[in-house]
Image 1 (cartoon, rainbow over the protein chains, first blue to last red):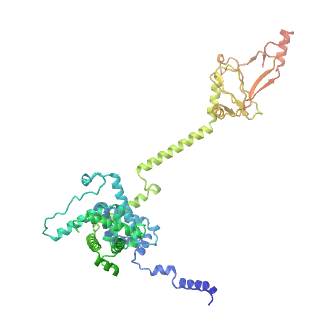
Image 2 (image 1 turned 120 degrees about the horizontal axis):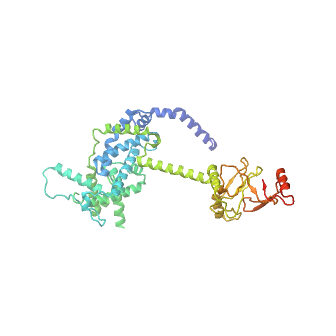
Length: 221
Length: 254
């Protein structure tokens, strides 16, 4: 075989491949229970498919936004807004990435917008009175109690509360990658897609976030 | 050298999954370096602590509320293109539209003033007492564009043909140009203030044997004087012969 005949052979192979696996057939072969298929069905007006999607992701998204905002009611509202946006943009959805990446990106954007809104509003909260005005890190309001506790569950609950509070004091650019990595257990690659940054940036931010958190959680580690 | 090595090892340890084993060089380094070992242990503990946060579930009525929200969205979509706009935005848009339309109307009015208003202005100018400098307006059927000098009070505004833009701009607002070809010529009267406007009267011309001189502005600021020949009628000549044969008719009727 000569080099000149190679392109012709490639064309023939492509044609055979298309004949064997036409794109329409590939869509048929797709798992009907996949996220993409459900969203496709939602686009055609299948409400049950959308309900299935909501059922798959409602807890994950609510929990993620709650970890980001530290406000349960607000997190539920934002989670609903996330699904509303998915439903509204179903026609424009592209299958470039996994659906989970897509929905987490929407949720992240909403959570960050909410955090920025809160900053602008400058809500006078109780914690605000105890925050130093010189820009230093806020002091821990609920310092660890050195007295022995009877119940180990209480200890765990207190630790979790302290962790959640410490996470909520992180800057938003460190908070999202840390939650996605250490709470949700997502890969660096997926996090970089969700946050639309490079993997190196994600790794660096997560490392810095852990450093901040370690300082805040020194009493528990 | 050791510092760089520690940083490299720590970065590697930091990027590991929780249950993933570190590489052989890293393990070797951890045996030798107490600081890195402490770092590794504290980080692992922290990650376990953070990972211990449980998933916070959505409320039971999440689906119901979501359906209601979507139904509400659809109902709002019934408003069409203004669905997503709040009341304030809608009001602002309406106010802006009204402002734009009003501006357009004003600009249009300024560029093309309505004829009726100008005729009224002209009549007003005619009804006023004659100005100091007598300016007569003559319309002829052959003339398509006859410049008119508008008397404003007791002074005349003339349109000069110069290049002064401001003067042109002002004159554009003041001058009235009108096509008189379809109208009858205006009648020149004397002592209009003493005459009734409704009763047609004859206008005696004192200088019956003198030519009538009329000054016209051609619109570019140039004045042209036209002399009209003396007009007399047969009865006038008879009367003139009967009374004073050696004198020209002192007064004629024209």
